[in-house]
View 1 (cartoon, rainbow, N blue to C red):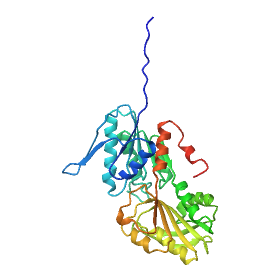
View 2: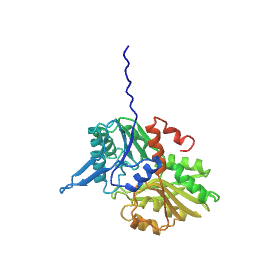
View 3: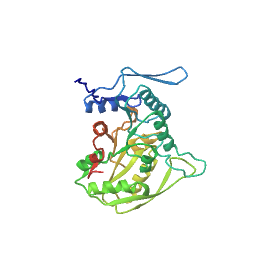
Length: 326
């Protein structure tokens, strides 16, 4: 009677990082107790991106981290090339980790002859070879349906709200949405902080992109510390106009809490000079030294990403990470 030896395969977790935000990737792998896979990445003379992994990735459970920061097209393309390299090197499963989803604000057509760029990004990652996406605080929940595969949508709310509650929880608070479109997020904050809800009624200028006009505050904010919550701060116009409207309506103080610190153009100067006690963000995007200032507090998103990667690798539940929290 002959005996046969059954061959077993042990899953191997491998984490890779693009060059957009290496500090975050290092924090993520430190939380997992592993090292980043050594990777060559550079540009040719004509600015084409080259990527090569210095270890075998065959059969691995691969997670590729890249934050889509400025210059966004450069880092998005690098991310796609990294996924393609993994697919061609026979990685078993490829998970794209994008703390900030590039082009997320272009999630629908507002006028004729416009693209839906958020869908295009999802399609490109699928074509490149991605099996799964992990991202944080999408601008619109519907983007989860753009990718043909599992999407783990993580929330920074527990991290941000815990900080705000610890520092300001003893005061008379109100949670404020900067516009009607973010009210669902503000409602979660309101529940977590046990504070009343208000929002800013605003109109968006059609002649100037990224510019809005804050009209009036809807809700009672007088003599309250207002926690103004949003998913991102880009040029700072929307959030600063909202803070000024709250100050005019008698708020005792304003604290801004946002997940993604894009901080384009005049954002830093606007935030420095607006009537706000503190701006609390996470490090889903890198914040260079010249964009840091005294009122800015940056919290680490790395523990959240590390835990999500661990759950996916072990075929656990990402959803349970937020049960009763978000």
